[in-house]
Image (cartoon, rainbow, N blue to C red):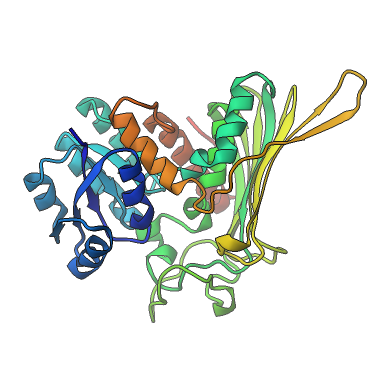
Amino acid sequence: MSIRIGIIGAGGMANYHIPGVRQGGAKVVAIADIAVANAQKVADKFGIAKVYSDAAEMIAKEQLDAVCVITPNKFHKQYTMMALEAGLHVFCEKPPALNAKEITAMAKAAEKAGKILMFDFNNRARPESYKMMAAINGGKVGKINSAQAMWIRRTGIPGFGGWFTTKALSGGGPVIDLLHMIDLALYFMGYPEPNYVLANTYSDFITDKRFKGPWGIPDKKDGICDVEAAAHGFITFKNGSVLFIRNSWAELNQREEVSVTFQGTKAGGCVKRLFGTDGLDETAIDTCELYSQDKQGKNVDKTIKVKPDEAMGRFRAAKNFALTIAGKEVPLNTPDQAVKLMKIIDAIYASAKTGKPVQIK
């Protein structure tokens, strides 16, 4: 019997969640969005039978096994809790929530319900990441002492005055929007316990229309732009490891870069995507490499070849959710990891506000 999934929210990521869970053998039976016309467009595109304006009504009527939550960040907790309390598994878009307090409550609800709660950390599902984790788990890298996580853009503000640039709706700017490389670095490092965070954020260009990205949502006249445009930070961990992070929507870089580089006791490594034009996947160049020394002290650089994935793991991440429900795969991410991630993000913003290091407890 197929796993029955409902979609909450008709945002752009539905274009990945729906085919992805179908690839995992699930059946998408309904979609709900308060903008019912948007839900109908998605339903027509993907052949979904039922459309609702109210997610609660969809959950009550459709005998679902799970939902995908694809809404603005502010509503991630609301709909995730609704679904978990109804006894459903949940695959939620990133970020997990607005802050650590919210995701902690969500994680406890999932544990109480005995249900799977996963998040769309799709870069873990990239072919490069699968290969790199195989090398790490196979002992080729050793202990990762240090790593650098970057998602930087030159012209990447996703619309002015809409929910992305309104902190009450989004939780923040590129730190929280482009959290994928922070997560991927932590994933490679084994998600160690964070200790201290020191960071700064910058709001230069956040209202400058020259720095708008080629995608996102339409500008909202007289809307709010109260999030950062860029952030730089340094994180220490209780096991002695460290992580440097750099995230930006608008910063005078050469080009967009999405990367994790790390230095282990046996080998270093790098997973990188370079864009010729900000936000346009077809211009991307992908790199996956390991760096080591042979017994004679000679540099040994190994390129790990994988099949190209323009979707950056988005289909595969949703597929993993469906296969996890079916008991055919293990989850690519867990609620406790999401809690650690959001504690780090909270600390980045707190340190930037105070100008002092923040200890994570």
